[in-house]
Length: 217
Image (cartoon, rainbow, N blue to C red; front, side):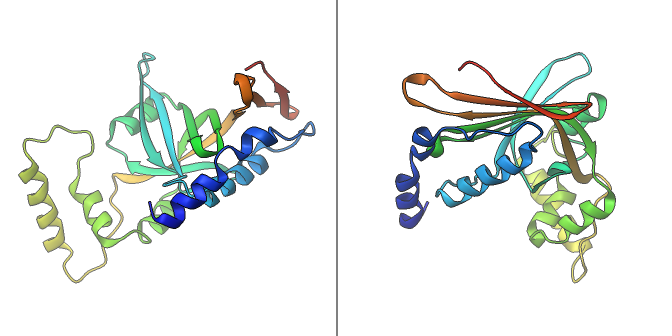
């Protein structure tokens, strides 16, 4: 983190504690508040404010979690990209129920999201894939994500193989790589407050749209 980012982080530390959560009108879209908080996090000096925990479950209900990077967030949901052969992808294809967690400690804020995951279109995956650095594109072809690796040299050899295969060419989107869109059904905005009397605001989808209520800290 640069000196400027460190200073900015120090300056923004705890601002949310004094402000608390805003009053929300019934029927409001939680993505509006998420976009405001995400913008605050990006301005706060935090490193990788787009980092989020993705928790998935097997069809038998066994959970696993890992950190990934959010790529887009809009009224259609939250999108991240991965290898479709990975453990997370295998679990999501078998059991689409998913939970996301954003934690922005400088602002004393968390956002918890529960919903379902669906694969994005190949066109969407390709658009993002072609925007990635070439090294990341090569890596997507070389890595059999989550599969057993015999040695670090095996991965290095596969990288060299892919580099040679596409030398002087555009790297195409692999069939085994793409995105997931999480369509939220429940979102919780958690704002730290003094004496652990935190603000917690819930949005839940219903047949009438988004319903809101607060819960005890």
